[in-house]
Length: 154
Length: 109
Image 1 (cartoon, rainbow over the protein chains, first blue to last red):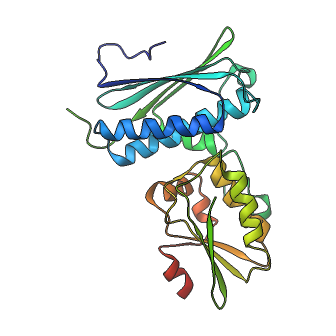
Image 2 (cartoon, helix red, strand yellow):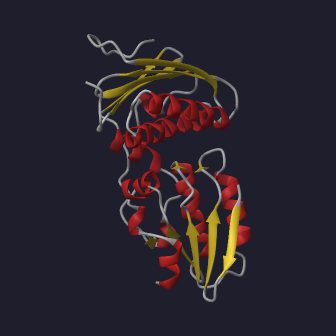
Image 3 (cartoon, one colour):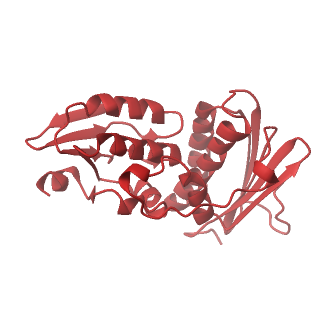
């Protein structure tokens, strides 16, 4: 269960297994935020990372596990020189048709037609440089790479 | 979810006294905003200066409050932190909301 990033030894490896609840997601994000900051990742990159991971984790809680408050999520994050590589697995329902949905671009609609959801995937796609989904037996596996744009350690 | 409200002559100022509006707190935010904006004047200014994290659930809640306030009351935003401003930009919701640099500037607008 290691992100496929051959050749490079990560500066930091963080592994989490959490129950699939909103509060557990919040606690994981808090811990990850502090770890990345204390390992020299620039504040904006930490914030982008937290946002992307909030979106994918919330998505697993709400859709793969359909808010049943049961099940677990495994996350392995590898801090590399130029990116954070993250692999997430869960045992929830597969994505529709076993594929990532295509992010709809929300144009400026009339006020009463404004969506109150669907923003997540837009943000995930905007902030990741790699996003792969695979259904593996009873598991969902999501592999994400979030670029480090500032002050990568050399 | 803590909200502080302050009535001004033609606007109601609501300050979010929380670090985050996320999937775990968005329903509470929506409910408490609904209570806070009953009989609101023409403008409600939401000061988000203390909010350091807003995910898509939180954004959906802000949009829902804005829709619930319309058409008699316009929900405007103030003091967005950089990452919260980015969420509005990435989703193009910055084109939908009036966004002010600070609550003080919003009140004189």
